Each structure stands twice: as C-alpha cells, then as structure tokens.
Length: 161
Image (cartoon, rainbow, N blue to C red; front, side, top):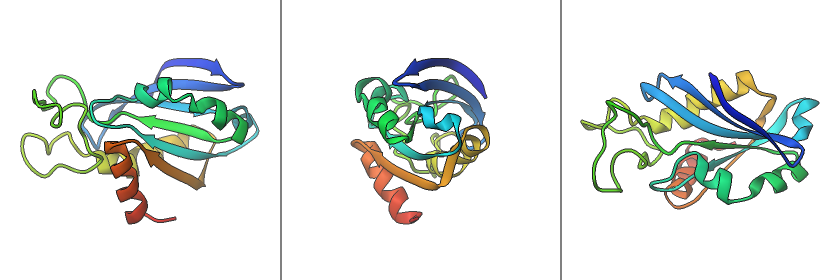
C-alpha cells in the first residue's frame, strides 16, 4: 500500500491510498478518514460507496462528512467505484466500464477480469484496512449514494451484522 496524501482535518487525518488489488487485477485507490480517537485505539468504520461515474474523491471532498465523523469518533472509508487504468475494459456509455463497477462481480467479457467489485469491497479492502489501520472490525456500517446506495443495500442484506 502506498500513501498518496495525508492531511489533517477536524483533528483527524484524511488519507488517500493506493494498492495493487488481487480482486480487480489493477491498482485501486481509496480514501480513509481517521478521527483523532484512532490514536487511542480502534474506532468504528462507516463505508461510503459513491455513485455512477464517481471516484473515491466524490463524497470525500463534497460531503463534508469528516466533521461529523470527527465528532462521533468514526472512521470513513471511500473506495473507488470501479477498477481503472490501461488494460481495464471501458465503454463510451457512462453506465458501463470505468466508473461503473456497481459493486458486483462481472461474469461476462470484457468486464469479468477486472470488474470484481463485490470481492474487492466485501473482502479484499476490509482485510487491508483492518490489518493496516486502528479500526474496529465488529463496528461497521455502510451507506452510499445512487449506484453506491444500491451497493450498500445489497451488501448489508447479504452480509448482515
């Protein structure tokens, strides 16, 4: 995992990180806000899944949720919405390709090799985060907007608790 940036915000740290993903077979980027309370031990985590055509930056820079999260002592994770880069399938239709991962695993070509966002968001990224940051694995929530709201609902209903 590589640190792209880390900036102080509301007493905590808003970081952006990249790593080589096995699930998507490409580099993936995510944002993570850690409140000040994380300096003393694990904190709860709220996942925010962004919508169609967005990146990890969308809610991270537009929602202003870090202020609330800092007050509540909750970490926020902002995963990217899809795999990206050379060799990753794309399409001129905004509802297909890069930016449109739908938080599911694709089964058809040309999407199947990289578009494994279910595996990424429900397995690989959580394992990475819980091993690298002071986060309470037993205290997680998930929300999202648009495509990300659909992803949040399907994940929450499929993996309760």
